[in-house]
Length: 263
Ligand code: KIV
Image 1 (spheres, rainbow, N blue to C red):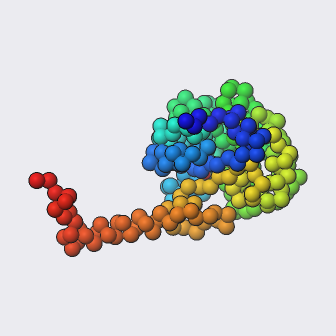
Image 2: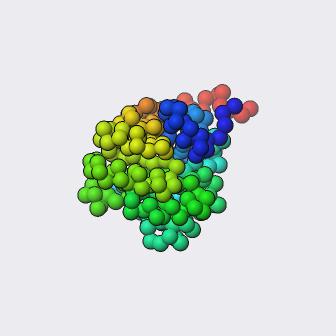
Image 3: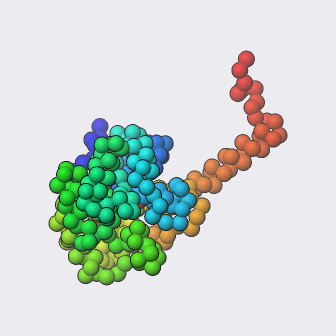
């Protein structure tokens, strides 16, 4: 039997050179499938706002929405580590607010850890949350909550800053760090520098693990996806085909046929 994923198991995987798999999920049905597939980390990302709620950015996602989805996902998982993603302005205002909101993910939603965006600037917040016993995954590089400050969803190339951010979040006690939208050469340097696992998204092969947004990689989403997304299925087309077949059979009276009737 496969054992539950813990922060120490993830760090061991890095030490052993075993790649870590991570995906997002937002609901019970898909979380169950992701868990069954043996994926180690399920992030209830604030990508929720864009891929699940159809909004232009992640900024409008609220704490209550994140707790609602994280609780549903956590209920579906037997093995994967479920991480709740702290929404925009749920941790930046004050340490007290950050602690209270991080705690909600564990107390109310059953998550095992939280993720938050930012490097050196949020290292004091990471430190406080970790000291209360809540594991924190950091997120540096392209941080979507800062989309307006970055002038769009842009690849981040400031090597010195990225290396400093990575070191600072590790020193603050993060158990892992997401590297998003970073040239692979820089991600490789960060991965070699850190003892905690790096989980890449648009950050090349050298990261200790990879994460993708589930609706993008399964082709559930019919919108344009970023260059780094590989589509492993075309669920959107499959579903529309199934729905069209249902509509056609109802219209031409071939469904429900005798086999679907009660006697
Ligand atoms: O919100 C999210 O899904 C994320 C991943 C892209 C890492 O932060």
